[in-house]
Length: 357
Image 1 (cartoon, rainbow, N blue to C red):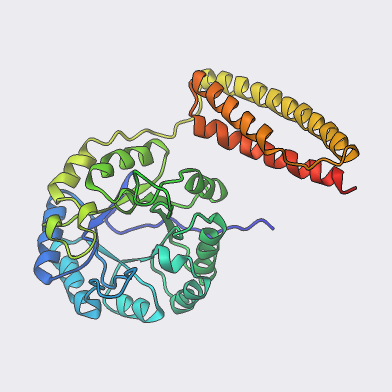
Image 2 (tube, rainbow, N blue to C red):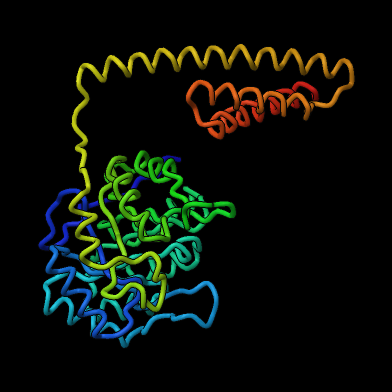
């Protein structure tokens, strides 16, 4: 079944409709002084939307979990004294009610919450009859359907000013990123819902200050709509996620050097190159069809001679040989490995089908 979102533009008061939409502020609202100091510096640098975590879900108990309702008047003061819009994370219906009563302009649903359909539905029920922009972070695990489901639940509650935040996905073997981007997943989300604004959160993705600038540029190069970046007046002393927050002046430096590429209509030159790609893709499909035909012939031979489907020595030989060949051709060996793993998986499926006839 094809699923659609009923979307309206975010239409944020006082915010220009251009890329990138920038939301910035500290990971946590720690003290009134910290909130106001950071907000005023950001406002002086032209930031229009201030974010701060009022409620902070932590992986383990004992860490700073936010000031809660005590911090909401600080957010109100930010709005009154700087004119900035305010945004915070909500994880329960009680959070939604308190945030809306305090006049918070934008709500977002975090990665831990978006991974739980029960929690998302409870928030959706609390939002019925309300007109407020809601942004939904991707779930911690790389599951596009779970992310889509969260968007649909909130949309079904009548929220039409809806957006997504790409903050990367958990991985057990990441060496560079805190949460690897896995860009193909937000790109797929954009493909499914072209009108959906998708922002990138380079702070949580990188987990380090030095990665915020390159990740932000990647997001702009890929055509995403905005950025949510953590900025603190004294990041080294932050009560949560200190390593991924930057000074407001550093944020201004990063944003000033972003190259914003436009999504313009394709020219005749690029259309000719795309025609070449289409022709090559047709050739690839023809070759894959021939390869699978040979695999099925091998399956018939294995069945006749009572051989197992998977020959691990042969499989390893293919991966090693093609990976090295790909490297010589200027391709990433890991990419080549993934391609041949997918080809092998389909080959095994077809061979099992023949073996069990």
